[in-house]
Length: 130
Image (cartoon, rainbow, N blue to C red; front, side):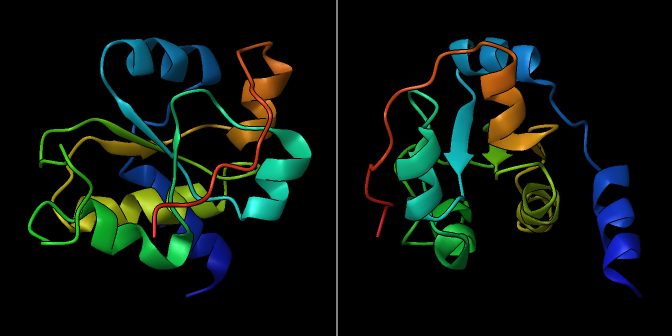
């Protein structure tokens, strides 16, 4: 399987969120998880209220059964994963679905699409959840 095939398979199982939809979902209680490296968050900014989690820690922090999960994470929590342009986030959201987060998805176009849509952005640099 190629990476393009992996991406297509991941996205086929997701109800991906456009930026305006993600903003609305966040207001309704969805958790936005930013998996971009800190250097990108510093350079480009962050989505207010998003939780930065390095990709390497994502499954441990969002597995509903993990003792290391973030507070409030449960199987029915809507989670929107954000990367720069919406590629790595699709693969990550598919992984979260396999862990039991049935409402995990990602942001179409990533952070850059959010910013281009004129949605709120704050200065970056928030340390990732360890």
